[in-house]
Length: 129
Ligand code: C2G
Image (cartoon, rainbow, N blue to C red; front, side, top):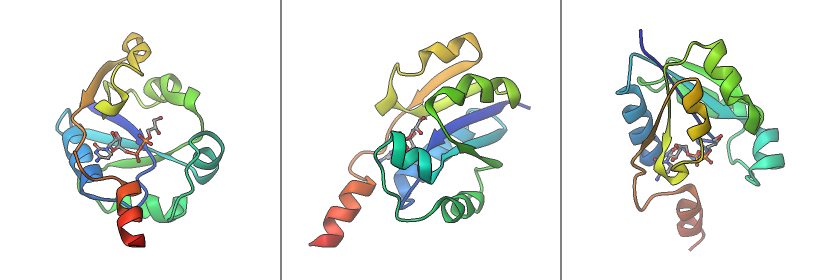
């Protein structure tokens, strides 16, 4: 069984996220999503989530491509996660191109095409009009 892991906030879940999760799942058989906690978002990603962690987790768990959701609490946990969960491939959107090449020591690393013209920031901006 080929195990894939990806990371993200996935707040205000939209079709760009779904495309990413589908593409990540297509890399193997089992997809783990490390979901940024509210604290990690606030402290390190400068993101204030609309939906709290438990709600974002429930949304992800309802998606057919997702097999397991774990918390992402810091930037440093990835290599540990890859070992602990016996991950074969780390996958993430190509807006992160090259940022996680250090993980090639532990697993394959793939950067997947980001869906253009959709983002949480854009949704929030348009809703304010
Ligand atoms: N994404 C995408 N297309 C979009 C928006 C997002 O493919 N239009 C992808 C991102 O590239 C990422 C995933 O969806 O792979 C989740 O996006 P975010 O929730 O914005 O996550 P991010 O802030 O990139 O967090 O340690 C890594 C970070 O936690 C990644």
